[in-house]
Structure formats: structure tokens, C-alpha cells
Length: 480
Image 1 (cartoon, rainbow, N blue to C red):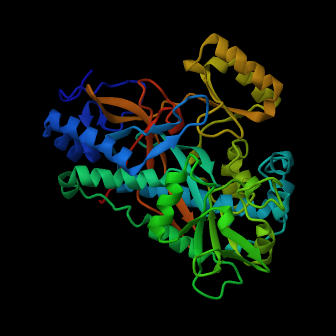
Image 2: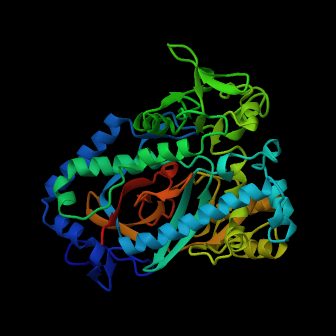
């Protein structure tokens, strides 16, 4: 069916965020009034301009694999996703609650391990986890914060139904795309912003800098010097690393730009060494310090962990934070909320089966064509099986992988992800989306009103990851 003659196809089994019983929902009325009043030729022109701006700015995503051209332009949708302030406030409360619980869990498992002692979570999931770092056991980062930037991936299945798909506690990427999406939309459609009450997100980088400065180490006795540590220009998220450093007004450094002298870390500059207090690191744990982790790492700083242990520098996020975003540990986050905060979770997890459990494994193997199965340590949409969209051979091949190492997999139902209107050559069509808001944890916990909406550009696809062909769109929160 179509709505209001504008060619938006409805998919009955999915919640369409723009419509309700054939009527445009209130948050989308201004957007649809603008869309209907704009010449289609103008929309096509603006779409091409947006693509050109993405290319000019260098907003690409590196794809690792066999393709000869590994740099892809991220598809950008000119139709925004819209939330009411009331919807956002509920999400904000739930995300902040989750961030507090995850950091309490990280402090606990690197100290007394009370949640394990109580039997609330199996010891093997924590202490045999490949992301668990024995090197930081007993260490005390400033204000007991291990994960300073948390990306919570959310999906929507109904008007009031939101679920947490996964937690990203190490180095969640994509915030630069969130900010650039807004910048491009404001540049292309200024009249649309003048007619709408959209809460701003342009203060994110100032908030990020304040958050990083607020967790300066004990030995910092002046205004903290912050740097962004990148693996280098060949990393898939290098655009974001340089973008955030530039927007915060801090230095972007590689491991070779830093060195340890005594109890402190220094940055090489044209004016001589400069002490560094806070490192927003965008490299994996194993590469941080070749004297502590991967001995042949050329990306890290020799001796960095000794300075970190002594309180001479702060690493954001802390080494070992990844144990909290493991996909098997994820299933216990609601229990963390109850255990550490004494509260009921505001946001629910997606129902999940752990293949390490015999009963769960049997169920998953029996229902494999109906489920989404993920590697416990996987990311970026790689290594997963979407049962309903897979061939019989793909399902059987995946079954063998699960049987070879059941503990390495979890499974979830194929959710009816919500759809939002997405602009393509034929007009507006529904496409599935998720949302990644970014939670900053320092002296206070803050969220910008919005996040990165990722959209599955292929009809019927539920995979929104940029590395798998997904696109992005601006996310609006309307002021009430």
C-alpha cells in the first residue's frame, strides 16, 4: 500500500517509524511537509551534492578483504530519522543506567569479583575471556572508570519497544559520521532546520574533551594535556581519529610520537618534549605497549603500562574494558544493573541463547534457519549468520562452525527491526535501521541528543554495518 500518494511502501510485519495506521506520526509531519513541497529534481540534486560532500570531506570506510578497492564511500540518506524528546529521554535514562552498571562490573572483576563470587555470572565467561587483561588486575583508574566512551547499539520493534543489541565499551566508532551527517544536512537544507525544533549535537567534541580532562591521573597537577592515539592512516577509522582530534583541539599522535621517561609519558614536538596526561587511545589492547602485551607491536609505546599503573597517565578507555562488551557477557548486563545499582533495567536485552549452554545449543541448532547467530568476539557484521537470508549450504557450513566451538557463538531471534523512510532514485522506501548513541563517562555522564543511525540500504536486508554496505542518516531529537 502507499501513504498520502508519496509512494512509501508499508511492510506490515515491521514497525514503520513514520506512519501509524496509514497516518503520518507527529514527529515526521514537518519532514513530510518539506518533502512533499520540494521539487523531485531538487531532491536529486541535493542527494548528489551530499555524496560529493562526503567524498570531498574524505568520509569513507576501509573494508578489509580481497576487494581491490577497499575504500568505500558510505551511502548517505537525506531523509532524517526523528525522535520526540520524550522518546529520547527514556533512552537516555536507560543508556546512562547501563553505562554505570558496565563500569561497576569492570571495576569489580578486576578487583574482588563479587558478582562472580555471588554466582550471578560464570567465572569462565570473565576470567577465561580473551578480552580479560590480567595485566590490569588491581589497578585503579581515575574515578573507577574503565570505559569512558560507550556506544550502545539499539533497535526498535514498536512504538514503545526498544532493545539493546550490543554494548561497545572499548573504542566505539562512528561518532564523526553522526556529526558530519548533521553538518551536511544543515548545509543542504537550512530552511528545514529553521522550521523544526531540533536539539543540537555540535557540542559533542567539547563534551568529549571535558570528559577526558575530568579523568586526569592523580599525578596531573595542571590543566591536563589530552591526545588521540591512532594506529595510523591505514586504519579503517582514521578519518574519525583525525576528525575528533581536530574538533577537540588536541594532537593526533601515533605510538612513535610518544615516549616514556621516568613516571610520565611525553609527546615529541618541535619545541621539545611535552608531558601527556590523558590518552584517548584508538588502538587495541594488545598493541598498546610491547613490553606488556604484543612484543612485536610497532603501534604502541614501550613502558606505557608502567606509567599507567603508577598514576602518571590515563588511558581512555582502560585496557581490559573489552570484557564488558563480549557478546556472551552482554546477556548478563540486566543482572549487573540489579546487582550493582539495585534497580530494574530500563532497556531490555534482545533475547539471547548462549551456545556454550547445552540446552541453548540444542535449540539453536534446531532453529538455525530462523535465527541470527554471531561470534562472541565478532564485530562489524562479519562472521555472522542471518538464518532467514541464508542458503541451506551456508546454514550447514555455519552449523559445523558452531559444533567445532559452541562457546564462541550466541544466537538471537530475527527481530522485526523498525523501518524509516529512506530516499532512493524511485522516491521514499522503508529501510531497516538501528541506532548508536554515544555515552560519555567521566566526572559526570553525558549524552548528546541523537546518535548514529545506520540504515540497511538493500531492500529487505537487516545488516546495517557500513562494512557490509549499510548507510547512515541524520538523527533528530525534537524539542518539546
